[in-house]
Image (cartoon, rainbow, N blue to C red):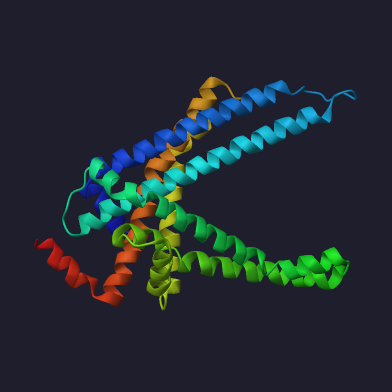
Length: 286
């Protein structure tokens, strides 16, 4: 855990700049979505009337879902970009090299589509891991066999959760592998599977603990802004900006720590399984 803090202290301006840029863009997205949400909610009558066209509510719901989806996509892209840049910063800090914001961008820019591809494939694999064990039970219920279908569905839910966790954490090191080895999407997935093999529980524990700590610290740091934003009964301009600031603070605190923990786990596994320590020591002498 201390290593995730040390690289921030090694290149504080770069790490803070990357996190701030990602956080500001995320905050702008938060302002947009909350502003549009407020406008859509304001269009709806407070009390439904018998002659009210239900399509009015349907259009509002669809608009809100579209806004939420767009914001989720933007947040996901920012997460990929920020994690990739911060991984390069940490990787270079291990051999004693400082990295500027421009250098981090130059390193991650040609890799962005591949990083996106890795994220999409890992997400799809995790979704399939969750849905496939559930499918037989759902099919039985759909066919009318409610009792056996419900039992099979319940077992499928537990199996799906376990399988999803296994898939997600087996492939958790694909992003740092792609960023630091500059390999392809499929090779990054294979590298993650190979590095995690034999150390699944250690990897899960370290990444999970780091993520929980980062989110907790980020949430605590953002509490004053969250309380200020939620104090009003409506989405006023002040509330919108306060909630956006809460999102900014959370991203700035959590993103570098989570990215650092994941990259450090990747380096730890390579040192333990591939004698990376010797390679890093030689690189530090150049």
